[in-house]
Image (cartoon, rainbow over all chains, first blue to last red; front, side, top):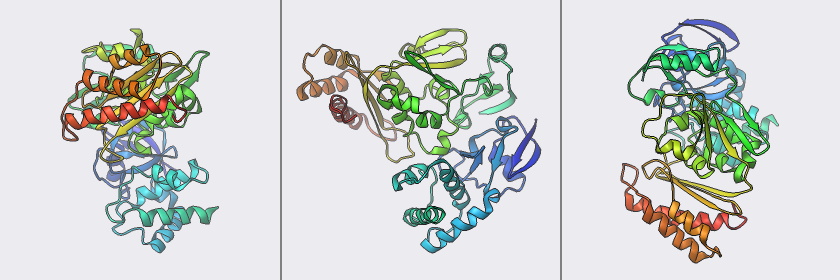
Amino acid sequence: MKVNLLINNEWRAFHVEAGEYLADTLRRNDFLSVRRGCDTTSCGVCTVLLDGKPVPSCSILTVAVDNHEVTTIEGIQKEADKLSDHFGREGADQCGFCNPALALTVYAMKKELKNPSDQEIREYLVGNLCRCTGYIGQEKAIRSYLEDLS
Amino acid sequence: MKVLDYYRPTSLADAYETLMRNPQNQIMGGGAWLKLSPGEITTLITLDGLGLEAIAEQPEAVLIGAKATLRAIETSPLIAQLQGGLLRDAARHVMGVSLRNIATIGGSIVGRFSFSDILTALLAMNAQLVFHARGEIALADYLLLHRPEKDILLWIKIEKDNAHSAFRKVARTRLDFAILNLAIVKTRATTTIALGSRPQGPVLAKRAMAYLNESANLTEKVFEQAARLVTEELAFGDNLKAGKEYRRHLAYVLSKRLLKAVNSDES
């Protein structure tokens, strides 16, 4: 089946099987920042933005998002660089495997919530697992990133 | 689940006709658990673009489209006002935001997942389901059907009762399924108690409800007796998450605690 996706502001056409998932389509076409983790919606490392909202790309059929907008970390590179500076300062990343998905989720949260509290930040990021950091550094980095923007 | 073909119907009649054409054809909810389901689907039918994402207010009720996502429900001002915000409270406990951006209320209902927090809340709220062919049926009756006939769930209808409510989910982690979930709705006249993930699916605690609804004064002793009835009348079981004795104990403690909450202004 032919599917058109607006990926990072560029229209792309793909031929996919009906049962193919978005994470597989993206990775097959060299969007390797979209990680494959648990593959069952639990870990969050496959998160992309679909029409601006974070979604688990491992569990969305590619045909179901025909003619929709998909954003990967490459689509928000400037914001990701800023967030990365804060992560570095707070020691908030180690292996980096979860970072693209986390950055996309933080970006979506920033658009959706005005002045989120610490609790709201934790609630929003509950689906993004990190096996290295223990989350405290990430929380500090996200807070300082949001404060810098305001 | 293997999917052989995908179809985007132009109308509900088209969707229903396609659904009935082949026993292996299915309607897609949000698709969140599609990968984990066994079997093969000949044609997966989406309901996108048919207006079922809406959450609409009627004079006496709120209508929720079957395609409304759990995130849309969680953030809807209408749902926040509905029966003390019970459905919002249940929705926000379902895994993370990204999952809730794709999971739909229709998928939660038709999937009849025994661990569902949404089903437990809807059961306590006396939700009515509106299907394309069958018409209207109470969720409580729908859950009793062994194998419901194939149909398309269109709307979930919930009365705008002036109620206090409370919801609790106990799970090992924030992303895990419930060891037990419990929802209570208290209107001026009645109290409704639903428990799910026992690990069997959600049910009403009818004896405890009858006892409460016949009690002239709702005292701490009455709450204790109602909680005891909950543990006596409902079956609990074992699975990898917890044993039945632990679940029964949780049911007693949470029933008592939530009954106190809905009968004060804390809920």
